[in-house]
View 1 (cartoon, helix red, strand yellow):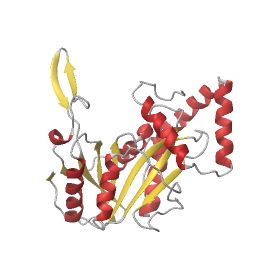
View 2: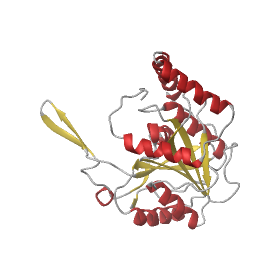
View 3: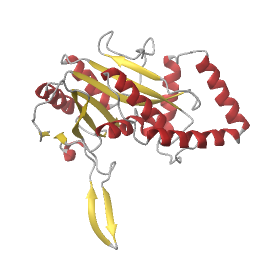
View 4: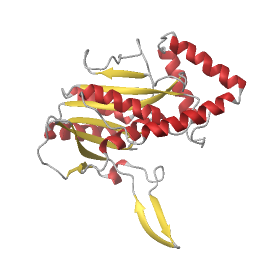
Length: 282
């Protein structure tokens, strides 16, 4: 890890999202990219120590038959200002290696920079319809940390494959820094980016930090995708009936049970990487 900006920070919060299985619909990484904008880097991490380049290959630009540029996977902390406070944004692809060593480094960085609170963002597949508002589930290192009427859940024991962000969450909480997580529930039948969830995560973050976060182009992108999904559902009777059944569950305020979430997550992990197109129903 290398700190490149040690200038003073005002009441910094650290917001974290990693490109991993817990980023369904690319909702969390899209949200933090909008949040960070062109913010300057505060710290960077050694990519050669963290990534398997055969799994996350650098992107090569070839112009007129001449290789010109390589874009490598990068994990970095950028800074932005929201209201009267600084916000540090940790984002990038989920590392392949050294999760526990990374957690130790991140805790040290958070202490050195005076981070007052930690907010992780994520998204998981769930039995919810695209025709309703995106539900948000929360996690918290102590009761009462979540804000904006987001509930910690689901009730009971939920055993799922861990993501690197959860390793960081636990390490930060054990260090004494208050930690929360906001997780959007993505319709499991939708593949590709889901901007409505990115938008709702930013709204949840804004309520948590008591600031207004500009959403950029996300509202227009969400409207366009909603139109495509509505059209796709209207062309198939079974799909339309299924969406209507999910609507009924949401309208009855039925929260997902742990086993339902596990089922959807397992299916998502099986299907991930099959190349479904953006905005498709499957």
